[in-house]
Length: 340
Ligand SMILES: NC(=O)c1ccc[n+]([C@@H]2O[C@H](COP(=O)([O-])OP(=O)(O)OC[C@H]3O[C@@H](n4cnc5c(N)ncnc54)[C@H](O)[C@@H]3O)[C@@H](O)[C@H]2O)c1
Image (cartoon, rainbow, N blue to C red; front, side, top):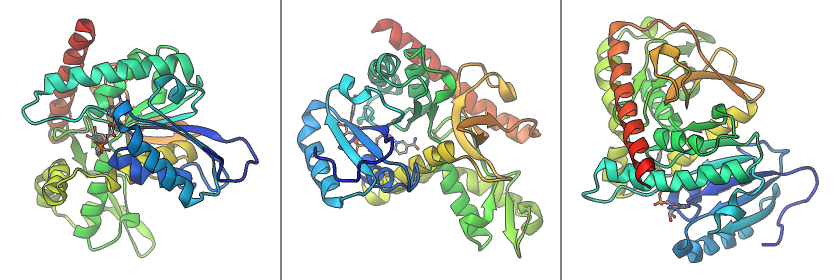
């Protein structure tokens, strides 16, 4: 495709897989408009989808051209994994095998192991060695783990999975509950898996009122909401959107993916943290090697898990449930890699 933007500076190469799908349709403009890498950073989009979707992808490329994004230097649209992963600086791995009716979790994992094994190998062979990767396609945490396993030359810290949508959902629910706005709510944590075992933990949430931040328990001591209502609302929100829209969350997933990568690129706000699923080194008792959602801060494009947060019995039990699920997924994925 002919360049549509100015050609000064050094552009970053950004891969989006599942590029003909619905999340990518909302994510592409966010990346191309500078909402992720900033208003000064030119980008070259690498768009990957599977061969049967190339016609649709061609339509997306036409629309990208018609948007005339000033920061967009070029577009590589392809079904060829090698062309897609060549020299990339950032990757949003959105494309995955969807769960079909009657499909067991085992079968879903097996299908996705096949995809993320190939893409991990491509990262290892073709991407820049400091590439930063966000896995969105489900089961996101375990897909990231597989991807990392097949990309031994890429630091494990550089391959992450998305729980930012869960964080955003929880912040919006809390803001609504305390009759405020999301920018006045901070320090929410999503622990664990991007699945319905995740633990949205509001114990440290702070709310801003009259220019000062205080613990949510001081603003509104509503344990019932935080422990009994918020957690299932966030855990089941995806299903609620599907029931209403007859399609899964896409605009909000794209926004969350952009938020995750923007904060990784630019850093987190002072006195706040975000949730990212990252490789565990045993923090908070989570087994090493699992890709687990933790509270993190980011500086100089390096994330760091927030240390020493107190874990009470309630939180411990919730963290154990989601850990157990991720360990089972790891075992199933391991078995699937051996049988492929
Ligand atoms: N982590 C999260 O918070 C979160 C939130 C929402 C959705 N998701 C997941 O994101 C994924 C994408 O969702 P969507 O709504 O865009 O789905 P979609 O079905 O609209 O699009 C997926 C696209 O991926 C493509 N694809 C499949 N296999 C591929 C491969 N090997 N290489 C490249 N492309 C491939 C498909 O052809 C399709 O165009 C799903 O797995 C969904 O479950 C994750």
